[in-house]
Length: 344
Image (cartoon, rainbow, N blue to C red; front, top):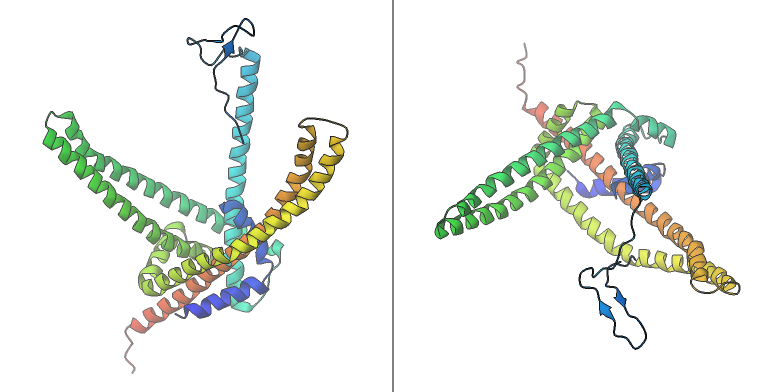
């Protein structure tokens, strides 16, 4: 497997297939001063009287909350929770649609060189493959969590020696649990890395070959097993490129922030200065913040999302091309190992 060729091709796709940027930005959107109110209350009868601290109620007297206010607070919390839940649901749907669209659009582009429109991409993403991808992640996530917490409970068993009166047994149980905990952490890290690689290819098995959930996981496992060295090299290259990308983006993002400060700060100062001619106190600062903050956020968010979208498109394309190459090599190897039928 020529990993460098795959990376160059993924970069070419990212630069030239600009419709993919829409789905990369959607993936980027869906992947990723208050002050305390405590204190004591001091009171005095006059300027020459010493202040007496109320030690029985050091925080002072809290205002009484009426049932109407409490009901309003509960209603607001329920509405807030519902909004957060809806955002999570919408974000999850958008994520799987966008990932499915990216994988399928790159695969079709490699098959026939045809560039699809954003509408056609959404049609490819809005499919049973996206649902199966979500179900696959849900099942593997639940299975992983169940195994992890089961292991934690087993690790905690030696701590039952603390129920005895024997100090040596207590020490032994503690050392056993701590040692097993470190072993579990190590195994968990390896499992997460291995499972992450398998799921990368399982997602593509669902999107490209339209396999079922279990079949896709098996396909991902067999590809990783058959091309383990090639895939590890690709993973290391992608990791290194990710670090390099982050280092390159540091000055870029700093420049974006500087531009955003100027773009938002100058109008804010102008409006705040005008407001200070008519009002006093914190009002001019509040007005300036209302004007400047949205401009600052927009100027920062748009290029940052675009840059992150490019990274998502490049990464997804690279792994899709790796899947295609690994699958082709695996099938070629399987065909070569088939026994040849005798002639005549």
